[in-house]
Image (cartoon, rainbow, N blue to C red; front, top):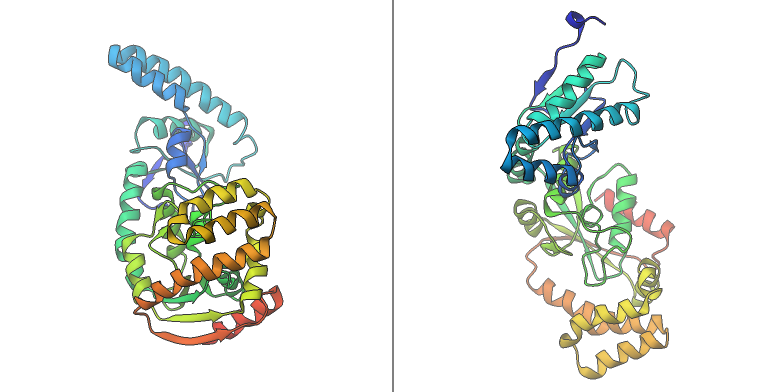
Length: 350
């Protein structure tokens, strides 16, 4: 391909166009980890250490800093082409962005364009994208009809949502997006929580894929999931949305919780440490009994006490301030997968 026949480098504010085969974030790994466009891959032209080096040198000599930066950028782009992009054919059409759509993304774009690939730069880069996320979170939630799935701790609400999604229902799984089950013991040992910004990006991307003509199902939550806050307008819609309440016997809930929180029964020391955070909410005798049950590996007795002495009373207190309309109550005797699937099918027809 001759220079004159090279495709033009386009610019666009649209990061969701189906014309892009890939979205490439060329910012440093730490910038990418904090937040990025969902689905983007991180192919940095400067890693974190290189970015610090160039920035520090720039204060002393902008010219020397630019030379150092150019050498790093050239080497990193060459590595990207030789590894991640080696198998891309002529139909490769990436969207590329950096912080503001400046030198980092343009350096990558120019090189990929010289190969002959059809390259688009995101107008305004990540900064513009982040502004769009904030605007969307202010406007999107009011456009949807939300239904809340409510119920005591251990009634398998998350699993019911999963079955609803399998039936083609629209589900906003806030706990899944937050990598947290929402309670004190709900942290995910295998996945750290995302940043607040990335959490908001994931919510926005999920809502953008939904139709305003269909209901969105959401599990009842507080306005905080682990360390993350549910965006204000999403939370406002949730507070006023009608609900379906799921009721299951304590025995079924205990069995489900032991299965769902296996990572805690396998790490009793950590479980004991976590329960120390709520010892002020129960009597000393109850708290000491929890610790003894942990020592004795008496998991069913422990979970039953936690439910009856802490979680269920907390739920009842929250329900006292609940202004939602209840559309129906669904009782389920067993929380096995087949029973949950049937329950989800009934709920989907409400």
